[in-house]
Length: 166
Image 1 (cartoon, one colour):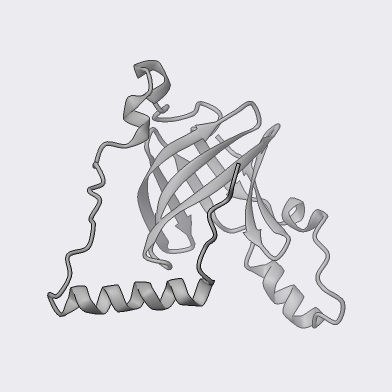
Image 2 (tube, one colour; image 1 turned 180 degrees about the horizontal axis):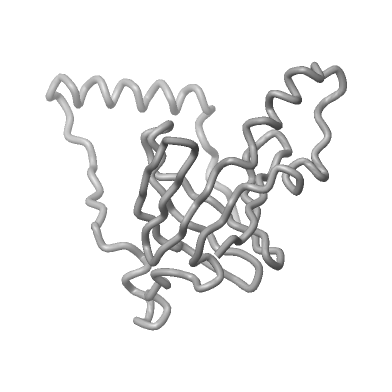
């Protein structure tokens, strides 16, 4: 089997840019590909398409658990103890109530609700898709169940734990 020799990378990039410029000037028609709106998932058998609308392990009211959240978290060496205490003071106040397709959050006087959908689940966790006001996009959040607790990764090695209260 003989391999076809490829042009050097930058020569191919230059050619592509020249073709793009020619197309923009109306001197060349480029090949176009139409992408169907039909997702590959729609080709799956119906029983594989169906995503669960909710998960019974999630349904209920959960409160942030500061003690469990910081039980195994160690800040980086040199992290200012005052700042660490301030960080810890932010936890243990948030309450989340998960309903069937909607979650409600309470933090002091602040109240909010968002629709969510379950993307996947297994014996230990669910992955939910939620709208983020901060990032202005949908985010995927993995929720890991451990008895009467669940945890969500926050980044920087910190996972926030929530304890079921009802």
